[in-house]
Length: 347
Ligand code: SAH
Ligand code: SF4
Image (tube, rainbow, N blue to C red; front, top):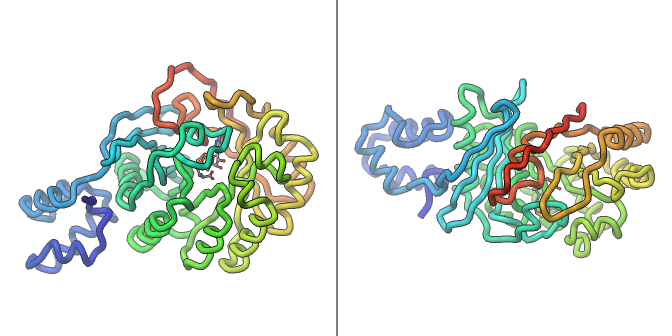
Protein backbone atom coordinates (compact mmCIF):
# COMPACT_ATOMS: atom_id res chain seq x y z
CA UNK A 1 0.00 0.00 0.00
CA UNK A 2 1.43 3.35 -0.97
CA UNK A 3 0.18 6.88 -1.37
CA UNK A 4 -0.05 9.01 -4.52
CA UNK A 5 3.46 10.31 -3.77
CA UNK A 6 4.84 6.77 -3.78
CA UNK A 7 3.85 5.91 -7.35
CA UNK A 8 5.33 6.88 -10.69
CA UNK A 9 3.59 8.87 -13.41
CA UNK A 10 3.28 5.67 -15.47
CA UNK A 11 1.56 3.89 -12.59
CA UNK A 12 -0.87 6.78 -12.21
CA UNK A 13 -1.58 6.68 -15.94
CA UNK A 14 -2.48 3.02 -15.71
CA UNK A 15 -4.71 3.68 -12.69
CA UNK A 16 -6.54 6.37 -14.68
CA UNK A 17 -7.23 3.75 -17.36
CA UNK A 18 -9.63 5.09 -19.98
CA UNK A 19 -9.83 8.65 -18.57
CA UNK A 20 -8.84 11.34 -21.13
CA UNK A 21 -5.09 12.00 -21.05
CA UNK A 22 -5.41 15.58 -19.76
CA UNK A 23 -6.67 14.11 -16.46
CA UNK A 24 -3.18 12.83 -15.77
CA UNK A 25 -1.74 16.34 -16.22
CA UNK A 26 -4.37 17.82 -13.94
CA UNK A 27 -3.68 15.22 -11.28
CA UNK A 28 0.09 15.60 -11.58
CA UNK A 29 -0.06 19.38 -11.43
CA UNK A 30 -2.36 19.37 -8.41
CA UNK A 31 -0.21 16.89 -6.52
CA UNK A 32 3.27 18.16 -7.28
CA UNK A 33 3.01 21.85 -8.07
CA UNK A 34 -0.09 23.00 -6.24
CA UNK A 35 0.57 20.96 -3.05
CA UNK A 36 -2.97 19.62 -3.09
CA UNK A 37 -4.47 16.57 -1.47
CA UNK A 38 -6.20 14.57 -4.18
CA UNK A 39 -9.65 15.22 -2.72
CA UNK A 40 -9.01 18.96 -3.18
CA UNK A 41 -7.98 18.82 -6.85
CA UNK A 42 -11.26 20.27 -8.03
CA UNK A 43 -10.36 20.13 -11.73
CA UNK A 44 -10.95 16.37 -11.42
CA UNK A 45 -14.45 14.86 -11.17
CA UNK A 46 -15.41 14.09 -7.56
CA UNK A 47 -15.84 10.36 -8.16
CA UNK A 48 -12.37 10.10 -9.66
CA UNK A 49 -10.84 12.00 -6.74
CA UNK A 50 -12.47 9.61 -4.31
CA UNK A 51 -11.36 6.55 -6.28
CA UNK A 52 -7.74 7.74 -6.33
CA UNK A 53 -7.86 8.59 -2.64
CA UNK A 54 -9.16 5.11 -1.80
CA UNK A 55 -6.63 3.37 -4.04
CA UNK A 56 -3.65 5.35 -2.73
CA UNK A 57 -4.44 6.63 0.76
CA UNK A 58 -1.92 8.91 2.53
CA UNK A 59 0.62 6.96 4.59
CA UNK A 60 1.23 9.51 7.36
CA UNK A 61 -1.17 10.57 10.07
CA UNK A 62 -0.52 13.74 12.12
CA UNK A 63 -0.53 13.04 15.84
CA UNK A 64 0.80 16.31 17.18
CA UNK A 65 1.80 19.80 16.14
CA UNK A 66 3.78 22.40 18.09
CA UNK A 67 5.11 25.84 17.20
CA UNK A 68 7.75 28.25 18.50
CA UNK A 69 9.60 31.41 17.40
CA UNK A 70 6.17 33.10 16.99
CA UNK A 71 5.08 30.41 14.58
CA UNK A 72 8.21 30.65 12.40
CA UNK A 73 9.20 27.14 13.50
CA UNK A 74 6.68 24.33 13.53
CA UNK A 75 7.11 20.67 14.28
CA UNK A 76 4.80 17.77 13.48
CA UNK A 77 4.79 14.29 14.87
CA UNK A 78 3.45 11.75 12.36
CA UNK A 79 2.48 8.12 12.77
CA UNK A 80 3.59 5.90 9.87
CA UNK A 81 1.62 2.99 8.46
CA UNK A 82 3.79 0.60 10.48
CA UNK A 83 3.01 2.46 13.71
CA UNK A 84 6.36 4.25 14.20
CA UNK A 85 6.41 7.94 15.03
CA UNK A 86 8.59 10.42 13.17
CA UNK A 87 9.09 14.18 13.27
CA UNK A 88 9.24 16.92 10.65
CA UNK A 89 10.19 20.55 11.21
CA UNK A 90 9.45 23.56 9.02
CA UNK A 91 11.33 26.84 9.44
CA UNK A 92 10.30 30.18 7.92
CA UNK A 93 13.09 32.65 7.19
CA UNK A 94 12.71 36.02 5.46
CA UNK A 95 14.08 34.67 2.18
CA UNK A 96 13.25 30.96 2.30
CA UNK A 97 11.12 28.26 3.87
CA UNK A 98 12.95 25.06 4.78
CA UNK A 99 11.56 21.68 5.73
CA UNK A 100 13.72 19.29 7.71
CA UNK A 101 12.61 15.73 6.90
CA UNK A 102 13.18 12.40 8.61
CA UNK A 103 14.55 9.54 6.54
CA UNK A 104 14.18 6.81 9.15
CA UNK A 105 12.13 6.19 12.28
CA UNK A 106 14.92 6.56 14.83
CA UNK A 107 18.54 5.92 13.90
CA UNK A 108 20.98 3.05 14.39
CA UNK A 109 24.13 5.18 14.35
CA UNK A 110 24.12 5.89 18.08
CA UNK A 111 25.80 9.30 18.14
CA UNK A 112 26.03 10.07 21.83
CA UNK A 113 24.86 13.70 21.76
CA UNK A 114 21.80 13.13 19.51
CA UNK A 115 18.32 12.38 20.88
CA UNK A 116 17.45 10.29 17.80
CA UNK A 117 20.61 8.24 18.28
CA UNK A 118 19.84 7.80 21.96
CA UNK A 119 16.41 6.40 21.15
CA UNK A 120 17.62 3.72 18.68
CA UNK A 121 16.32 2.52 15.32
CA UNK A 122 12.78 1.42 14.54
CA UNK A 123 12.61 1.31 10.74
CA UNK A 124 13.27 2.80 7.31
CA UNK A 125 10.79 5.25 5.79
CA UNK A 126 9.40 4.72 2.29
CA UNK A 127 9.61 7.15 -0.64
CA UNK A 128 5.98 8.12 -0.04
CA UNK A 129 6.58 8.76 3.66
CA UNK A 130 9.49 11.12 3.02
CA UNK A 131 7.74 13.00 0.20
CA UNK A 132 4.52 13.30 2.19
CA UNK A 133 6.49 15.14 4.89
CA UNK A 134 7.65 17.62 2.24
CA UNK A 135 4.18 18.10 0.77
CA UNK A 136 2.55 18.41 4.18
CA UNK A 137 5.05 21.15 5.04
CA UNK A 138 4.49 22.82 1.66
CA UNK A 139 0.74 23.00 2.35
CA UNK A 140 1.27 24.29 5.87
CA UNK A 141 3.73 26.95 4.67
CA UNK A 142 1.26 28.53 2.24
CA UNK A 143 0.99 31.29 1.14
CA UNK A 144 4.80 31.19 1.45
CA UNK A 145 6.50 28.83 -1.00
CA UNK A 146 8.42 25.92 0.42
CA UNK A 147 11.85 26.41 -1.12
CA UNK A 148 14.33 24.10 0.64
CA UNK A 149 14.40 20.47 1.74
CA UNK A 150 17.08 19.28 4.14
CA UNK A 151 17.57 15.67 5.24
CA UNK A 152 18.46 16.62 8.80
CA UNK A 153 15.55 15.16 10.72
CA UNK A 154 15.51 11.72 12.28
CA UNK A 155 17.70 9.02 10.78
CA UNK A 156 20.73 8.59 8.58
CA UNK A 157 19.64 9.20 4.96
CA UNK A 158 22.52 7.25 3.43
CA UNK A 159 21.55 4.16 5.45
CA UNK A 160 18.20 4.36 3.63
CA UNK A 161 20.04 4.94 0.38
CA UNK A 162 17.61 3.88 -2.36
CA UNK A 163 14.73 5.80 -0.82
CA UNK A 164 16.84 8.93 -0.32
CA UNK A 165 18.04 8.91 -3.93
CA UNK A 166 14.55 8.31 -5.31
CA UNK A 167 13.10 11.13 -3.19
CA UNK A 168 15.83 13.52 -4.37
CA UNK A 169 15.20 12.53 -7.98
CA UNK A 170 11.46 13.17 -7.68
CA UNK A 171 11.88 16.47 -5.85
CA UNK A 172 14.25 17.59 -8.56
CA UNK A 173 12.25 16.34 -11.55
CA UNK A 174 8.71 16.97 -10.32
CA UNK A 175 9.16 20.06 -8.16
CA UNK A 176 12.19 21.57 -9.85
CA UNK A 177 14.37 21.72 -6.73
CA UNK A 178 18.10 21.91 -7.37
CA UNK A 179 21.41 21.82 -5.52
CA UNK A 180 20.89 25.05 -3.62
CA UNK A 181 17.53 23.76 -2.41
CA UNK A 182 18.28 20.12 -1.59
CA UNK A 183 20.67 19.17 1.20
CA UNK A 184 21.53 15.72 2.48
CA UNK A 185 23.28 15.53 5.83
CA UNK A 186 25.21 12.35 6.56
CA UNK A 187 27.15 11.12 9.54
CA UNK A 188 29.84 9.94 7.08
CA UNK A 189 28.94 6.63 5.44
CA UNK A 190 32.00 6.78 3.17
CA UNK A 191 31.07 4.23 0.44
CA UNK A 192 27.56 5.70 0.17
CA UNK A 193 28.98 9.21 -0.27
CA UNK A 194 31.06 7.90 -3.17
CA UNK A 195 28.07 6.18 -4.71
CA UNK A 196 25.91 9.28 -4.29
CA UNK A 197 28.51 11.42 -6.02
CA UNK A 198 27.94 9.32 -9.17
CA UNK A 199 24.12 9.56 -9.23
CA UNK A 200 24.19 12.80 -11.20
CA UNK A 201 21.78 14.46 -8.79
CA UNK A 202 21.91 18.16 -8.00
CA UNK A 203 22.26 18.43 -4.25
CA UNK A 204 24.37 19.87 -1.47
CA UNK A 205 26.17 17.41 0.78
CA UNK A 206 26.73 18.12 4.46
CA UNK A 207 28.95 15.79 6.46
CA UNK A 208 28.60 15.73 10.24
CA UNK A 209 32.22 15.85 11.34
CA UNK A 210 32.23 17.18 14.96
CA UNK A 211 35.86 16.20 15.52
CA UNK A 212 38.93 16.02 13.30
CA UNK A 213 40.90 13.53 15.36
CA UNK A 214 39.87 9.87 15.44
CA UNK A 215 39.87 9.50 19.20
CA UNK A 216 37.35 12.28 19.89
CA UNK A 217 35.29 11.52 16.79
CA UNK A 218 34.90 7.85 17.71
CA UNK A 219 33.59 8.88 21.11
CA UNK A 220 30.95 11.13 19.57
CA UNK A 221 30.18 9.20 16.38
CA UNK A 222 30.58 5.41 16.75
CA UNK A 223 30.54 4.98 12.94
CA UNK A 224 33.99 6.59 12.94
CA UNK A 225 35.44 3.21 13.96
CA UNK A 226 34.16 1.78 10.67
CA UNK A 227 34.99 4.79 8.48
CA UNK A 228 37.74 6.75 10.23
CA UNK A 229 38.75 10.26 9.21
CA UNK A 230 41.21 9.24 6.53
CA UNK A 231 38.60 7.01 4.83
CA UNK A 232 36.02 9.79 5.13
CA UNK A 233 38.46 12.29 3.65
CA UNK A 234 38.81 10.13 0.53
CA UNK A 235 35.03 9.95 0.15
CA UNK A 236 34.74 13.74 0.52
CA UNK A 237 37.47 14.25 -2.08
CA UNK A 238 35.56 11.95 -4.44
CA UNK A 239 32.41 14.00 -3.88
CA UNK A 240 34.22 17.21 -4.70
CA UNK A 241 36.05 15.79 -7.72
CA UNK A 242 33.11 13.94 -9.28
CA UNK A 243 30.37 16.53 -8.67
CA UNK A 244 32.53 19.67 -8.79
CA UNK A 245 30.55 20.90 -5.79
CA UNK A 246 31.78 22.16 -2.48
CA UNK A 247 30.62 20.20 0.57
CA UNK A 248 30.09 21.43 4.07
CA UNK A 249 31.10 20.02 7.43
CA UNK A 250 28.77 20.27 10.38
CA UNK A 251 30.29 20.71 13.78
CA UNK A 252 28.13 20.74 16.94
CA UNK A 253 30.16 22.75 19.44
CA UNK A 254 30.34 20.87 22.73
CA UNK A 255 31.70 22.56 25.84
CA UNK A 256 35.24 21.37 26.58
CA UNK A 257 35.02 18.51 24.03
CA UNK A 258 35.60 19.95 20.55
CA UNK A 259 35.73 23.73 20.98
CA UNK A 260 39.41 24.34 21.77
CA UNK A 261 42.06 26.17 19.75
CA UNK A 262 43.61 22.76 18.99
CA UNK A 263 40.26 21.44 17.73
CA UNK A 264 39.95 24.47 15.42
CA UNK A 265 43.46 23.82 14.12
CA UNK A 266 42.69 20.14 13.43
CA UNK A 267 39.47 21.07 11.68
CA UNK A 268 41.19 23.70 9.55
CA UNK A 269 43.87 21.22 8.52
CA UNK A 270 41.20 18.66 7.57
CA UNK A 271 38.74 20.99 5.81
CA UNK A 272 41.07 23.34 3.92
CA UNK A 273 42.48 20.86 1.38
CA UNK A 274 38.91 19.77 0.65
CA UNK A 275 37.81 23.39 0.26
CA UNK A 276 34.88 22.59 2.55
CA UNK A 277 32.56 25.09 4.16
CA UNK A 278 32.10 24.73 7.94
CA UNK A 279 28.73 25.05 9.62
CA UNK A 280 28.95 25.49 13.38
CA UNK A 281 25.93 24.42 15.47
CA UNK A 282 25.96 25.21 19.17
CA UNK A 283 25.06 21.80 20.73
CA UNK A 284 21.39 21.54 21.58
CA UNK A 285 20.49 19.87 24.86
CA UNK A 286 19.24 16.26 24.82
CA UNK A 287 18.11 14.12 27.75
CA UNK A 288 20.80 11.46 27.36
CA UNK A 289 23.92 13.60 27.08
CA UNK A 290 24.95 15.71 29.99
CA UNK A 291 27.68 17.85 28.46
CA UNK A 292 26.55 21.35 27.51
CA UNK A 293 26.87 23.29 24.32
CA UNK A 294 29.74 25.78 24.09
CA UNK A 295 28.89 29.22 25.50
CA UNK A 296 28.30 31.98 22.92
CA UNK A 297 31.73 33.59 23.41
CA UNK A 298 33.46 30.22 22.75
CA UNK A 299 31.33 29.74 19.64
CA UNK A 300 32.49 33.12 18.37
CA UNK A 301 36.13 32.45 19.26
CA UNK A 302 36.01 29.07 17.49
CA UNK A 303 34.44 30.66 14.44
CA UNK A 304 37.09 33.39 14.38
CA UNK A 305 39.90 30.83 14.77
CA UNK A 306 38.63 29.06 11.64
CA UNK A 307 38.25 32.24 9.64
CA UNK A 308 41.77 33.30 10.64
CA UNK A 309 43.00 30.02 9.18
CA UNK A 310 41.35 30.79 5.87
CA UNK A 311 38.18 28.72 6.31
CA UNK A 312 34.73 29.66 5.20
CA UNK A 313 32.63 29.17 8.38
CA UNK A 314 29.16 30.15 9.53
CA UNK A 315 27.23 29.72 12.78
CA UNK A 316 23.80 28.17 12.37
CA UNK A 317 20.96 29.98 14.13
CA UNK A 318 19.23 27.85 16.70
CA UNK A 319 15.57 27.29 15.98
CA UNK A 320 12.90 25.44 17.89
CA UNK A 321 14.74 24.51 21.09
CA UNK A 322 11.73 25.24 23.28
CA UNK A 323 9.70 22.61 21.39
CA UNK A 324 12.57 20.10 21.07
CA UNK A 325 12.65 20.71 17.32
CA UNK A 326 16.26 21.84 17.02
CA UNK A 327 19.06 19.75 15.46
CA UNK A 328 19.52 16.48 17.28
CA UNK A 329 16.47 16.86 19.52
CA UNK A 330 14.01 14.84 17.45
CA UNK A 331 13.01 11.67 19.21
CA UNK A 332 9.22 11.62 18.74
CA UNK A 333 8.54 11.18 22.41
CA UNK A 334 6.78 13.77 24.50
CA UNK A 335 8.92 15.28 27.18
CA UNK A 336 8.08 17.64 30.03
CA UNK A 337 7.64 21.07 28.49
CA UNK A 338 10.31 22.81 30.51
CA UNK A 339 10.88 26.16 28.83
CA UNK A 340 14.34 26.39 27.38
CA UNK A 341 15.67 29.74 26.39
CA UNK A 342 16.48 29.85 22.70
CA UNK A 343 19.94 31.36 22.33
CA UNK A 344 20.60 33.01 19.00
CA UNK A 345 24.16 33.39 17.93
CA UNK A 346 24.73 35.86 15.13
CA UNK A 347 25.16 33.93 11.88
N1 SAH B 1 21.98 11.47 10.40
C1 SAH B 1 22.36 12.64 9.69
C2 SAH B 1 21.25 13.65 9.55
C3 SAH B 1 20.38 13.89 10.76
S1 SAH B 1 21.16 14.69 12.11
C4 SAH B 1 23.60 13.26 10.30
O1 SAH B 1 23.99 12.85 11.38
O2 SAH B 1 24.18 14.12 9.65
C5 SAH B 1 21.23 16.38 11.54
C6 SAH B 1 22.34 17.21 12.16
O3 SAH B 1 22.08 17.47 13.55
C7 SAH B 1 23.71 16.52 12.12
O4 SAH B 1 24.70 17.42 11.70
C8 SAH B 1 23.91 16.13 13.55
O5 SAH B 1 25.26 15.96 13.84
C9 SAH B 1 23.29 17.30 14.27
N2 SAH B 1 23.01 17.05 15.67
C10 SAH B 1 22.68 15.88 16.27
N3 SAH B 1 22.49 16.06 17.60
C11 SAH B 1 22.71 17.38 17.83
C12 SAH B 1 22.62 18.19 19.00
N4 SAH B 1 22.28 17.68 20.18
N5 SAH B 1 22.89 19.51 18.88
C13 SAH B 1 23.21 20.05 17.68
N6 SAH B 1 23.28 19.34 16.54
C14 SAH B 1 23.04 18.01 16.61
FE1 SF4 C 1 21.72 9.30 13.61
FE2 SF4 C 1 22.53 11.67 12.67
FE3 SF4 C 1 21.64 11.42 15.20
FE4 SF4 C 1 24.00 10.36 14.51
S1 SF4 C 1 23.46 12.55 14.53
S2 SF4 C 1 22.40 9.35 15.72
S3 SF4 C 1 23.58 9.69 12.44
S4 SF4 C 1 20.47 11.13 13.33
